[in-house]
Image (cartoon, rainbow, N blue to C red):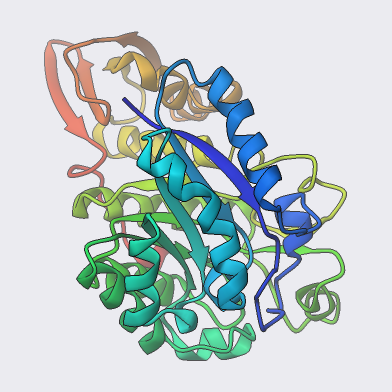
Length: 349
């Protein structure tokens, strides 16, 4: 049974840097105030009432948890110990910077019930990290991932394609390197320019050219497919739209409130391009959960294929895997997978 995540946002708390892209309060929709033990316990009680008997996972998002003073880290984790013992809370996860992780920290966190640590890797290219003001290196990320994995914990990595000095090739290389280092899951957040950041100044002065939405979708389709091929889940693609992140504070860059669907729809459209010749009538079967992705947002894929003279009939088939597509043209039928049968070149992005 999948756990219900009880989120606590500690926006920018503990973080020793302000990266060029960063406006954590906007991203998290939180002022970053740390909850006290009473607030932690009452929040968990509220979530427990609506969880329907599902297990609870407590998550500390934003900021740099392991850069907080040790006594503050303890004050956030100690109220959870009895709940862990009584199995009211199943697990704890947190996010932090790679350069604030070492073996001693991880061992202590594991002893306090932390099971998942998510790292803000962003890039494995040292030139990109320096241009973004990250204050750490790719080697720091490798070391941190190694510490987490050696302790038997689950390791996550956040990547940010499109940072200053980044290229599609370096984005793909960063992905490959965190996969090789043993990351258990990924988040892929294409760079956006937020108002009030150093990146906004660079953008307005012409020093930084952000990814367009179309290029970002094309790049993330390649990154997502590569992750699928490696068997590494991407639990989110694109920053989440909420009251703190919207068109009012996004100046430029690769953002859409349904970015993940745009990426998956692009993959299906590209697969149809490769599998179906122009001016054909084609019947497409997919898993029922993928019909909206196959059609595209506002049926974009239908219209796009119509421009090629392709007429699509889309039907569901419960026997297909979620990423499979049965293509029937005339009397010929073949099953394709966006994981193995979609051919991309990073040089074309």
